[in-house]
Image (cartoon, rainbow, N blue to C red; front, side):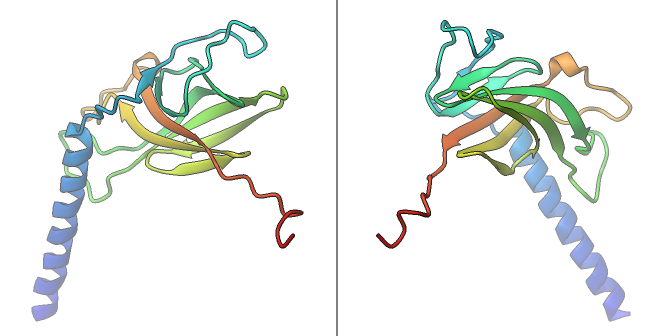
Length: 166
């Protein structure tokens, strides 16, 4: 009998932690001064493209932001399995978005970036920091035009293996 009580206690503790994480992430509002909203749809080859500093940028699907060396564009929501706000879930779920990266040399690549995870793209680190709107209500679909993604883009350290030990 004691094992059933212990197992139920663990399940309740996990639920409390998950609800706390969900509440914190849905009520937290980033107010960092480095946050920038970029909605440029100008192709990278255009010399009028505005280069923004590394840091945070909020984009909708199809919008682009250009940093020194890379332009990122979220293309599509691959997964939005976040727990609806009016439902109790055992797992919090996540959001995964397909992001196109175009480099200054003209090459491109696409990566699936998961909410809360950082992805290394060439020599850049791209982190999907937040997604709005927050969790949907059960049975309600979020329109793709309503999504906004906050990314943090940074230049990763570049290591030239030929120079190591010289």
